[in-house]
Length: 156
Image 1 (cartoon, rainbow, N blue to C red):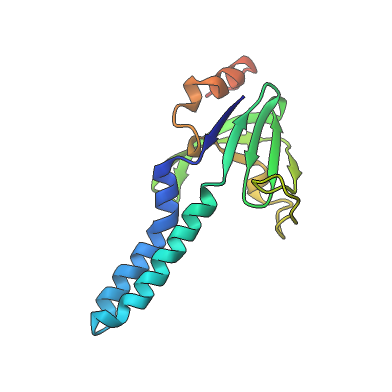
Image 2 (cartoon, one colour):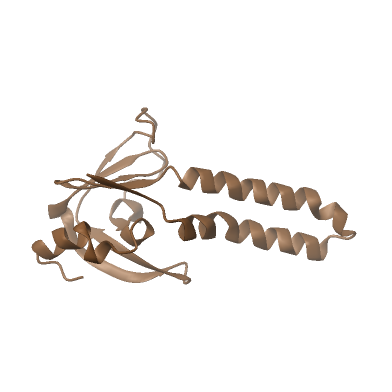
């Protein structure tokens, strides 16, 4: 059993792209610039909160499949439910390879194994039918994930 956390470049991009833009715009648009400091600090604090939240996410490989821990739920994906791979871009910036799922099982557990309530609108959401595998493991295609998929005849 192997566990992968969200890779640092993704975590930093996700957490600080928008807050950094807000901070720079605040410094450019608010005069005098010293009045922009509260907006800059709030933006960076928000980015830090997003990064901490994202660091709790994990992908765990088991003999039976993949287990993905997200914010308020865990998703169990048996190997036989992976039907393909989609290679695309995340927000148009970074390559993001996704496993396409026929089915998954959602369990209302947080990263500490405590019961939570599922987010509203989760049923039918694309998050339940895809796993961004490259978000966790850069070399997933040449590692155990790729081996399991090739053994099932899935083209990578």
